[in-house]
Image (cartoon, rainbow, N blue to C red; front, side, top):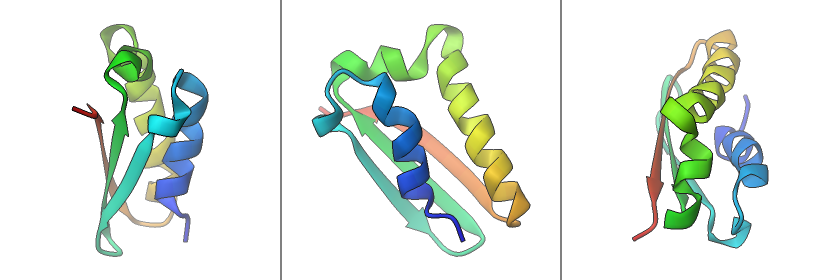
Length: 81
């Protein structure tokens, strides 16, 4: 099974200016997993992107990986504050 906390963190880390502020938490059971991404307020726009394109790309990659294992994945992106 894939560690989605690390997987999503590895996708987001190159996008932020303050990687030390990045927090990724995983919640849920084996079939339904929720991943919460917390970034600095200055980095929130970089992670979401124009019209949410970067966030949607991150979700698409992670959802495809989870679907192969029969897992339902939800990713939320928020600022720390």
